[in-house]
Length: 121
Image 1 (cartoon, one colour):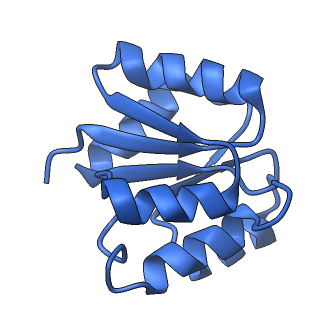
Image 2 (cartoon, rainbow, N blue to C red; image 1 turned 90 degrees about the vertical axis):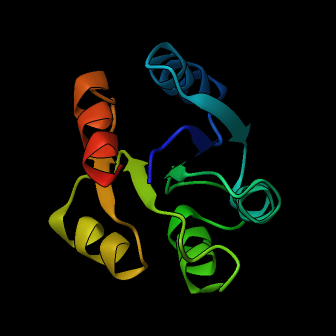
Image 3 (cartoon, rainbow, N blue to C red; image 1 turned 180 degrees about the horizontal axis):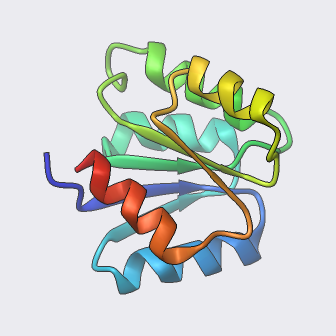
């Protein structure tokens, strides 16, 4: 499956801008949500090819949102890459257990993120 449309979920306007720029310049169509609840809702309505999900957010955090998306028959086919400042191995293991396909630590390295996306495509 070719990845064309990406949903970016992050509560930080700065991170949404920076990561959004990386993805847009690489030719992806990017939609954005500023929290986990909106991310889950957009995943259902837009059915993006990939979700890039922050972890630390108010309300529904990225681990909870990822679990909701990967357990729902409507959205379970959408891969999720967690993108977070949480850089402990235990955080990564926990994120992958929630259903995420990969894990990127902030600050985001553009080529690293794009390489992970290419590996999923």
